[in-house]
Structure formats: C-alpha cells, structure tokens
Length: 476
Image 1 (cartoon, helix red, strand yellow):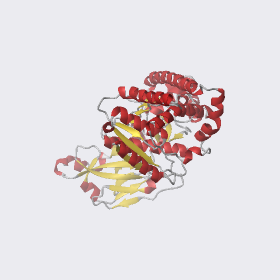
Image 2 (cartoon, helix red, strand yellow; image 1 turned 90 degrees about the vertical axis):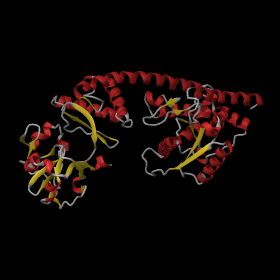
Image 3 (cartoon, rainbow, N blue to C red; image 1 turned 30 degrees about the vertical axis):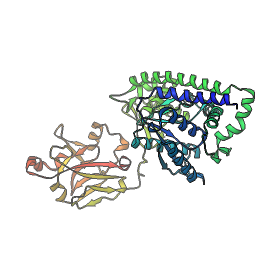
C-alpha cells in the first residue's frame, strides 16, 4: 500500500471509533478485548489516540490452548504498559468434551471472562475488534449451517447482553486490509496465533480455502454479505415485535413464566414457533435448535388432540437442564430430573435433631432445612416439637392427612396437592414425621394438627424453626 492509502486507512479506522465514542458519555471507561492479534491491537491503539489512555482498560483472556499463550500474555501486558493503559487478564479452562467444539467453547469462555473483568474496573462498555471480513465469514458460516434470520443477522454493532455491559464492535464496517494499513502506518506490533492457519477449524477453512476464490469472482462480497446481515437483523426485529405481541396474549398471570397451552396451539406453526423461540429467550434459556422447537410444538399439539385438557402425559422435551411441562392448561419450563424407578423403594431415614440446620437425604435428591424463625411464620414449628421424638422421613403410604390452616379442616394429601397446583411429577417427596406424627409435607407446608397445644401457647415458646425442602437442583 502507498503512504496515501495508509493515511486513508488510518482515517477510516479513527472515524469508525469516533462514531462509537460519540454514543458514550465523555467520562465513561471503555474496556478493550485485547488478544494481542492485529485486530485488537489496532483497536486498542486507535482507542487510546481518540479517547485517551485514562479512559481505556485492556482485558486479556488466557485460554492456555497454545504453547505461546504465556508469551502472548506478557506481550499484551507490556504493550498496555507502554501505552499507559490499565491492564487485566484472566485465565480460563476449557472443557475438552464440550459438544459445541473448541471454537464455541473458547468463545463462550472468553466472553464470560471479559464480562467478569469489566465490573471491578467500572467499564461501561466492552469493545470488540471484529471487522468486515469477520462479519462476512460469520454470515457464510451461518448460511452453511442452515441458520435462521437471527443467525444470518450475524454480529450486531452494539449488543447488550442481559446483566452485562454493552458489547460494541466499532470496526464492523472496516476491512482487515485497512487494519493492516493502520498498523503499518502507526508502528503497531501484534502477535500471530498459529491456530489461525489450522483449517480443521471451520472459520479458518473458509478464510483460507473459500474466500480467496470468492473474492476473485465477487470482489464486493463483503459488502453484499454485510447487507444480507442488515436485512436479516431488520426482519428479525419485526419477528421479535410480533412475538412480543403474541407473548402478551399467551402469558398467564404476571411475567412470562408460563403461557396458555390453548392459545399457543391455536396459532399456526410459523407464529407458534416464533413466539416459543422468543419466550425461551425471555425466560433466560439458551436458543434451541429448530428441530427441538418443532418437536416441542408437535408434542404440545398432540396433547391438545388427546383429551383437550392440556395434561402433561408423555410430553418430553428437555433443554439446558430444563423440561417443558404442561399442567392445568399452562405451559412452562421446570427442572429436568428423572423420576425414581418404581421398584426403588426408599427406607425411612431418621434424625435425632439437636439444632442441625440441614438434613441431607441423597435417596430423595434433596435436603430438609431448619432455619431460625418466629411463631408468625406459617411454616415454622417450635423446636420442642423437633426434639421430643426422632424425626423420620419416609414415603407416602396412603391415607395421610394434613390440617389445612386456611380452611381449618383436615384434608388428604391428594386433595391438597391438587389445591396447591402441585403437578404429579413434583409429588414424589419425603414426608417429615415427628415420631408417628406427620409434621411437614414439601410443597404443602406444616401440618398444624401436629402441635395444637404449642399454637395455643406460642407466645411462651422462645425458639421456632422454619422447615423447607430443597431439591438438589434448587440448591445448585
């Protein structure tokens, strides 16, 4: 490149960062994701020139995947110091058996570590160095994977993840060749990651084997794919707006925890799948594949055809540790746990209570918690009741009854489970007895009939304990 083109490239890079800076408060701290490669090195150098070193912090993630990782860390620390920029680094370990692959695992770990480092430094935005070539590669990869509109929208210039600082990509419309020109013009030094030449990785194979041939026949492919991404993002925004409208109609009660089964299956497939996808995102679940969503909708429609009651029956859709459920006409996600085998009868467990706060019951996959409380707590019992006889946890044998405090009558567990809206799959819980007296039923509460004399003299009893049952997955 000529000196004139180097100057043009420098202006393009600085102009791109100037636009991003104009959207930030003048005193806001900017975190730069700094790997030490060409892209992030140019981003850091240009950010310091425009915003000043005091407004920047360079964040480095050490994956440990390369034998040169320690040298890269040292290079990044030294460069940041030379620029007068605060520097922080975080080491991460990747799960070797991650089903998404090394690339996806490294990306997930990197974003997680960067987000965690932003908070202690007070950074109000995280700048990433992806550029126009990266965007073109992403669009092509998503096309080849059969992605939908959300995938084709590729990387957004600004994205605010839930609970994190905004991720800003100011170089998304800048070509890699322009970054190289900037680096040469300003004497920016960078490192080369040897893994970038490994064509076993899909992105590298595309970059080295496909894009050069594509560029020879379609020189403007980057701009064309960027337009495709923009069109897809626009269309996805419209779909999200439609999903918001539908979700408001489907939501049961406040929030979006559960939706109406009847109203969901009344929608056509495209609209139902769109709102299901949006609903999962709103509840904090990661995106599911199109095949899994389609299977979930198919099963929900079959429930409606079976008996029209919206019962759970054989509904089986698991995703990200959650299981799709349908109960009393409401569809929701609950903890995924396998039921105990019917032949695996559990022997009663016994505890002589001497002030313990937890009683772990692995055979029930959960724990009783005895927390200090006062007599006004509806799930509290006097400590004298916990000590006067051994506590026993055992299975239902049939015929057990609990005094319903609201109605002041004795009712069967089946009646109370139904009254409290406890689905059948959540009723496999241990009953807590004080000697032979039923004391507490998880998901229902304390049996007030167990201590009428204590209630009458509650003011004279100094120590009470609130009883809770926590499933293992709740504790995790």
